Image (cartoon, rainbow, N blue to C red):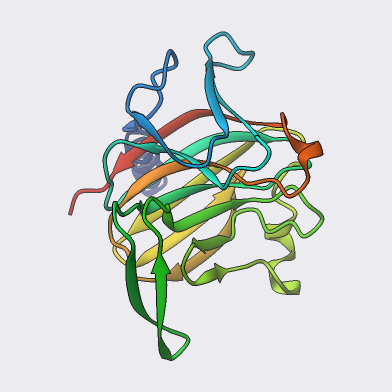
Amino acid sequence: MTPIRLVLSLLFCAAAAVSVADDDFTPLFNGKNLDGWVQRGGEATYEVDADADGGAQIIGTSVAKTPNSFLCTDRDYDDFVLEFDVKVDPSLNSGVQFRSQCFDEAKSVTLNWNGKEQTYKIPAGRVHGYQVEIDPSDRAWSGGVYDEARRGWLYNLEGDARAKARGAFKVDDWNHYRVEAHGDHISTSINGVPVAHFHDSVTPSGFIALQVHAIPDAGNAGKQIRWRNIQIREIAE
């Protein structure tokens, strides 16, 4: 085999290996009902559209006078690659939780953050943890990572260096998200564009959850967020 043919063969094998790995995903949504999910927090509604164009979808609908709502997986995940497609009404804010938790009783959690220890009071039943942002507003921080009910923004999209990332999200259209959590390394991308990448070891395990954000304006009640192709590949050490 000539050197050129050998290189091409090795490149083909490598590409095939990546393809096999990327196909090794497990659906989190069965396309028929919400088995395997449990709602926590507010009273926004979640339902299944099994016959939607583009494939079966989970639809979250905003409800006035209720806190943030979360549709949570009924088990935790440690290291993984999570992928999903999402389409959100342009007037809403949303997100997807990962490595998140919810306590049956109120707790105080002390974390070292920004060089000093800070204590956060977590109410009973409050979903908290990492959230990848879904932000159709002009701010355009989609793909950033927010620490729900604890430290706030861990990775925002301010500044000229993150302008390309701010342009990755398509408003009023479907967007493909990828979230990787491996050890203390967390990264996100939207539509193939890298967005967040940082290290944080506060929560090594937790559930996945689909958020319908509380709405400050009752006029936004009845607006929808749609998710489809929700799948995960767990990373074994």
